[in-house]
Each structure stands twice: as C-alpha cells, then as structure tokens.
Image (cartoon, rainbow, N blue to C red; front, side):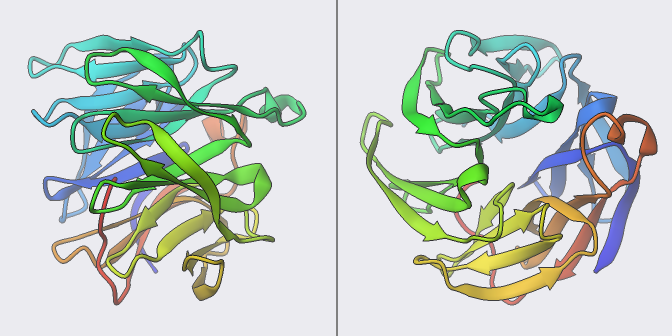
Length: 277
C-alpha cells in the first residue's frame, strides 16, 4: 500500500467527492480534503469532533458532530450551522452516516461509553430528512457504524460492529427502512467503515483484525488485505474509482490525541466503487 497522508490524529469517514478524498480527523477537530498531489486542505473545524460526512443535492456538506450529537451543515459562505439535533434519539456519541440522493441522512451512534469500558448497548439508527426533522430509522442496532446505499437507492446496508455483521434494509419511497435482515455474518471480523463496489461486494475495514476484507452477500470473503495496524474506514475513489483509500492508525481513544499515528493509505483494486457514500 502507498501512504498518502500522515501525521493525523484519528481519521474516519473517508468520502470521494468532486475529485478529492474528504475525511474527518477526530482529535484535531477538522474535516480535510486530500487532492491527487497529496496536498491537504482544512475544509472546516468542528469543535465537538467531526465524524460522518455527506452532501445535500445542492452541494452543501453535512457533518456529524459527535460529542454534542448534532448534524451540522456547511454553508457556501463557510458558516457551520445546525442542520438537526440528534440528542433526543442518540444515547451516546454520534458517529458515521450515509446520505442518499435526496439529502436524507442515516446516522448511527455508539449507544454507550465503550471507550471507558462500558458494556455495548443497542442504539437507534437515526433518519434525518433534508429539512432537518429526525426520527428513528431502526432500533436495537449493535453499534451501527459504516453504511452504504446501493446505486438504485433501494437498499441500505449497515455494519453492526459488535455483532460482527452487515445488516440490510429495503428503503421505501419515504426513506423508511423495511425488511431488516442479515446481509452477511463476517465473524471474526468487526466491521467499522465500509464501502460498496460495482459488483455489489462491500469492502469492510476491520480494526481488530488489522485488515480490510471484500465481502459478498452471504458472508463469503472474496479478498483480504492485511494492513499491519488497525484499519478504521475505507473508501473507493480516484479517477476511475479503483483506488481503495484506508484510514489506519496504531489505535484509537485518548492516546490517539497525542500520538499522531493516523494516516491515509491507498491500494489499487480491480473493481470500481459504486453507490453511496
């Protein structure tokens, strides 16, 4: 793998958008963009720690603000404003999300304070309409994490980290989630960030197994790439969408604030990215 960015604190939610890789760096409270020349640009600072990223149809960016459990919107003038308050439905820090073609977002949360040794607690996956109204999309998610939407916009697949599975839902015309089912059991792998390819397979970052794996429906592992350190998220991008960008670090939590071991790595793959994010 090629190392394309270093010296970061803890990178998450990589997104290929408008010819650049956007991602969040937790402990420096920044959303950054990486161009083809390896140059980093700070897009915006998020005081309460950024995580999931997406875009409304008009091009405005949506950013999960973790610690205050809000979804923020970046206006064209650079102002960061509240798009939705998730605090009544999120039982702990908010994390990753996916945004559909209409601007509807699906946002996960930790459920409990696992970083301090808390027992994992099932939590809500939250639906946020383009106007900022919120509702529960699905309850009893076991640490909902990375999410993808298929190119036809009709299926959402969510990684449930502590259940070692990818869970699928059908999406109806109102954005409600139906027909919950197991898309793949990937034990012993623990899914963190995920992305979809044009053959319908999903790349899964596994921080515990220190690898990324390509999985098809039913759970068969089609490919495995060892990263040698924890892999927390991944995204297909590049001009032909055949570069797999991987967020790696020596670890997470409080130590990551000062150790600055996080980096973005990249490897060429044979199947292009598809769907959302």
